[in-house]
Image (tube, rainbow, N blue to C red; front, side, top):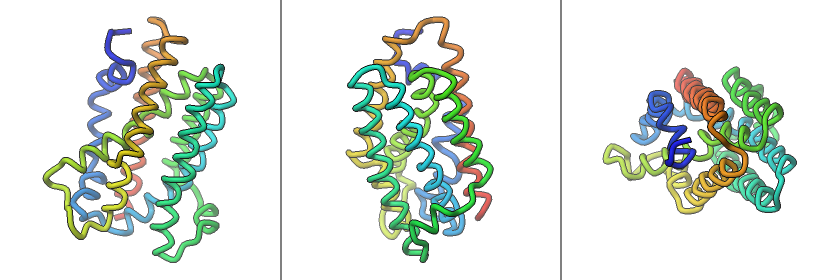
Length: 223
């Protein structure tokens, strides 16, 4: 592997896919406050179901952990998902008259199924490094999106109906979660990586990033 961090290497190998994900039209419209509510509502409802499966993926990471540090890293992100991200989803959807039980009972859309099952499959078939690379576009990518939107002059500052969403991912708490995920990737790479794994890890990262693009598009298509 190159001397750069694993995450930076993966991102550089998938520049085209990563840019389509981070700066997707859905994301741009969130920043501008112009995204139709129907699109954001469908996205948020599906993202709630998505996070249920991602929480299971981090439970799997805890099971596959080989050290106490690995267990703690998995537990910290599991907590961030179920206690922070999902709480925001419930609050948003509660304003539309949906209860948490009703959200959990919603049918999964195709892109939701494709993405979540891909991550779980990589975790089941591979080792802890494979699983965390599959998770990285979501966990680390949302932090990058939050930073970009917070710094972008085009982002609507006042009266943006999605300001809470932007603030959460741009905020220090979530940025710390993402930084910890990057550090965890480095630790796993040092212990489990090697030159013969580079191509496989890039393929996993690229597939997960493409599935993120499809997830945004799913929401945008409901506009």
